[in-house]
Length: 434
Image 1 (cartoon, rainbow, N blue to C red):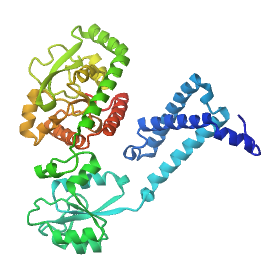
Image 2: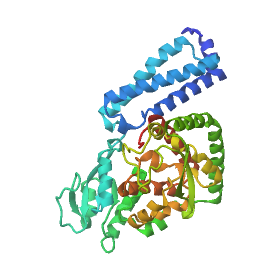
Image 3: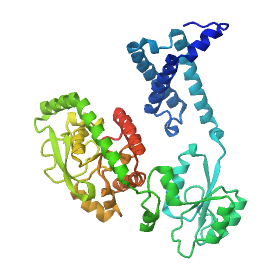
Image 4: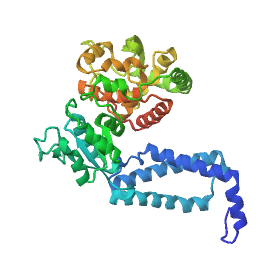
């Protein structure tokens, strides 16, 4: 429909129509999904202008293709050629423009919060490293305070130690500190309780390093993590209603997935059989809920007798993986048969990935609190899978456990849906596979 600048009646009728409402909703939804799957909302990935332009062009190209399919199936939902020709370049220019403004002046998102780290504990140091690499947080770490005041001037990360914990009140006032993060190596007898209370009631934000690290990174740091923090920390609740709702979602999603993926199952099974024969499915013992073993199903991605020398973690460019297996692992298709494990009640759609009993025994000896991850059903995908790489060493497994603890603490259906969306993005991009 063509509009004239004097034809206000036609414009009002067009905008008031329910079809126009659905046209806008469809276009916005398709564009948002495309931008999300191309990581345009992740400021850490678009710090370079060339990268930003490529991602935006790709996102809007995919969005236009998707809308074209919808408009072909339902022509009445289309805006018309005139509006599309005007809107497409305008949206691209405006979207690119404000992101370039943000990249040029990162303070455009608001004032910078000045932060002080009280103590020189490893959690605080790791926290500052993450902050330095994430300028979009709008946080400026002014410095550290030494527990004994003996290392003033020493550089820890950047900045270094600027004073002693005993002088925290004067330093906060002189440096105009907004946020104090407590990361003491030893708190007993060294925590300046009275000074921190004065700062708290003066409006300065005071926070434990573990809590802030958790909120910032989506992990619970295991460094100097005490049982008391786990016991008294908020979260880690699993109500009967939540457990029932999660199980209901598991059954519905796994049934739908099984039905929709049957054609993929057939193609994958044929490809495996043609390349390396039978068996097509691979059964492997894993540790599940409350430490109970179960047989996890996967499409076989390795040669037969791949573990004739005993269990071992998968490495980069592992020679045991078949050609079909590399493709299956890249897009996570080898995990699809685990919907059967979900229907059996052995697994969930979302949860910590189940580990082999041989590795569990070893990891429980080397990583504190490792056995606590078995307090929930293991999952086909999980928070650690979408936020971290494949774990193939004790250190990498430790980092994945930190993500698993975050998931268990904040267990909810909304978090599950967020993980499922992220998993679909990881599957499409093939990130983190081995």
